[in-house]
Image (tube, rainbow over all chains, first blue to last red; front, top):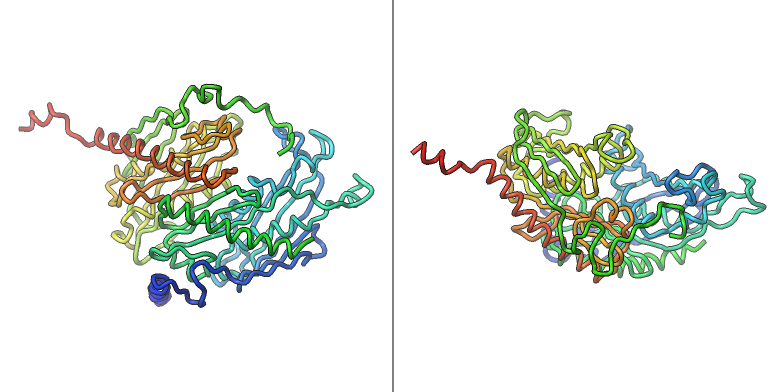
Length: 262
Length: 251
């Protein structure tokens, strides 16, 4: 019960601050936390990136293997995304099968990568109907201080952008080559706190939130994925203004991706 | 996406702007909603929407299982969206996959946004959605069925939740996609509206749309939801109105 009481006091405090345009960590409503992207963090992976959003820490690793294409898309490669909320990242996570929250993170990340065509799947095909590259994107959440979706998605795109196809190791070409990348979508998450809608929520803000909205935009000016989550509601005008803000933040995050480079 | 060898894309929009089944861009598929078809459940609803057939049942407020999910200040809303193995062309492996888990989560959160859960602390309101025949838009059909079933169960809530998917087919924004349009279209955007507040409690999107297209899609979806809202209310009225003849007999 005491934890519930603290949670309620904290929620009231967060909502009171938000009504004044303020936040507990001193940020403004439209201010993203400091972002750091460290590519190539894991040497055994074919691509990897460690991303920090403030205290949130997420590691994405890419592995490519040869496999069979799906029967309904014989000329395309296969890409799967999996996100794991490992128990070391938060006192509230326990070992066991993925929680609905973890499944949601991986599916929302996967959706943006697929819909925006980050990886040119057709280029992954080796022999139509027979042999293709299977690209595994595995995301490990190491520290949960809020906004895992954006951190996981940014880590996945950063890891894919710097990934190498191990063609030599698998004996299908004389040399390894960079994974062909099409687009760079970036997800940007907002939460409603009373009438305020703030970007890049912390763990406590997520718990106090009355609705969460994630918008993925790409560099071509397209919206490629959206997800409303948690209990709460947004008007169509809220959604339109969130989409506008997501483009502004998305362009900034894409600059950070470019700086991190290959 | 280059040529990935997928089946040939059908023509989704003809020269006159008619869709694959002859509908206009802003036209819904036929919808029939029946409240209370199941006797055992506290509330239930059956929705036939185009070629979708979806049954929903509500149990509760009742004891929470598993117990550790119990909350001291409100009821927990638990939802299980499940697709029957025979509901799609190629048999689906039975059981809850990751897609079903995600859909269950967003539907539960949408319902939790309107149900007065504080009135039933330490209880569970269990919502079961079974997709019996699927043809795109099953999460929206499931949410509509669940919402009518909650009303049928007498659970107090702020409003019913009409839902519909809007998408982009053949370059145009279209209401209520059917299977071919969902598979071969450029975008899919399911949403659920709280009609009295005008706010959205379920919103997802996959594909690609420009900002103006997205704004157009939101407006089209809200309009579609308002039509479905009337059908939901009519289904409940039909279930609970007393026939005039019976009224006279009683008097």
